[in-house]
Image (cartoon, rainbow, N blue to C red):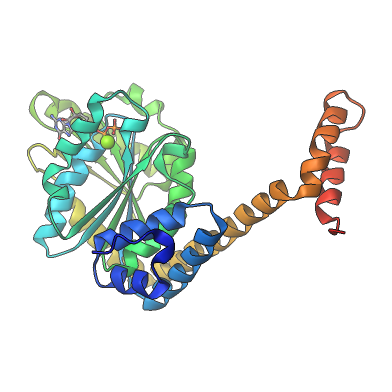
Length: 334
Ligand SMILES: Nc1nc2c(ncn2[C@@H]2O[C@H](COP(=O)(O)OP(=O)(O)OP(=O)(O)O)[C@@H](O)[C@H]2O)c(=O)[nH]1
Ligand SMILES: [Mg+2]
């Protein structure tokens, strides 16, 4: 295992390590991808280019649900189910320690304890602070690295706050929405957009005294989903009852995911989704770079304060101000 500083590792060492199954080098490559240092960024791109050329494919799955819906516990039991099928699993998990008090770190470790102990599993916690629902701006690139590392199923966890699902929707094939058993009233509280992007809904914690109410929730969700437009032609969203503690409904979710992938492959939709994911990534990178170039530009930096002041004092409109700043951006260096 290499402990050389990041800049001393060659692109070849990274690519060989990642494709050869080194979780250590995969982790270090992700760190490189997340770095905003220009030299790191350049090498990250070289590594990503090479990793994409490897051409490995995985099933990319998004898991979303409100805080406490049972996401971590579900991923643990679902991940163990995947291992029983001989699959390798990568989890891009939200690290709740960044949003909550100390206790939850231990809690989360315990929740994914058996999964994280397995060598066929890679778990990368993402700090949820600062980013929408736990997706970082580099989540897509991280998925590509995990794919090159040969993971068969890549699970991306997000908290259901709305915008993060839309982001994650542009980088995964299948989205599972986890919902606590509850009354129809609670159903009203869910953002319609989140339901629309779900490919299946799992009612969690359908055990013990909640078994009855879970049945009611299932029926409520089924009727709510019927009113939504199709996400993929020919795919009807199902509602499944699950209990991660009892292990019920977990194998059924895997069946549902497999059924989805086969159906999407057969209709050519999977290929279309993958091309769309690449298009999204292309423009995400362009937007990101343009923004950074713009705000890093010395002419823009010099013009910002005076232009801002003029806009705030009402001397010029925000539209004229924006045009002035863009003019400064296009100015050639002397
Ligand atoms: N009875 C029962 N309890 C469960 C089940 N799954 C999770 N829980 C409990 O629900 C609580 C929250 O579970 P987590 O898996 O941490 O939920 P989460 O969605 O990851 O939560 P955040 O990370 O805070 O958003 C924990 O106390 C779990 O033990 C289940 O299937 N049945
Ligand atoms: Mg969690």
